[in-house]
Length: 117
Image 1 (cartoon, rainbow, N blue to C red):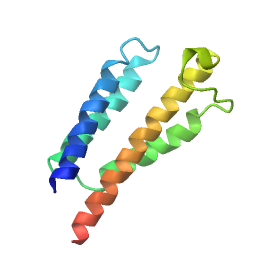
Image 2 (spheres, rainbow, N blue to C red):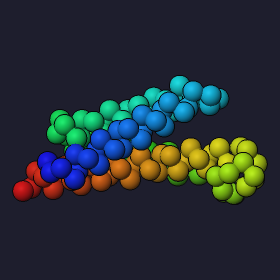
Image 3 (spheres, helix red, strand yellow):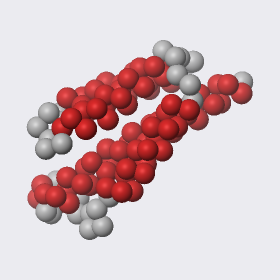
Image 4 (spheres, one colour):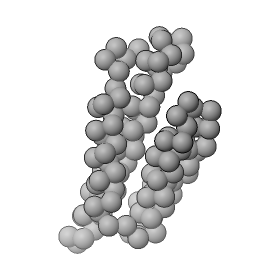
């Protein structure tokens, strides 16, 4: 694996780990800490070239489905001044899942491309 993708993997590992850390005061913190920690671990495994393409594909698909499920019908933004706290919270959680899904799909494409080369 080239240096660019290793760096991307480690960068997202750190970002997802930070995402897990800031979830400590969330009402459903255990679930979100678990989600972000799994994404961080998969990112490290991607960088270490110890990952099969099916793993990020499954996580990415699950996270994308979660994004569609959580996305509020009346999305009002990410800031507390943008609308009702429940809507803002759902929007933040949904887009967090979307970011994880997109990163996992990037890993999947890269791993599948690597197998064909």
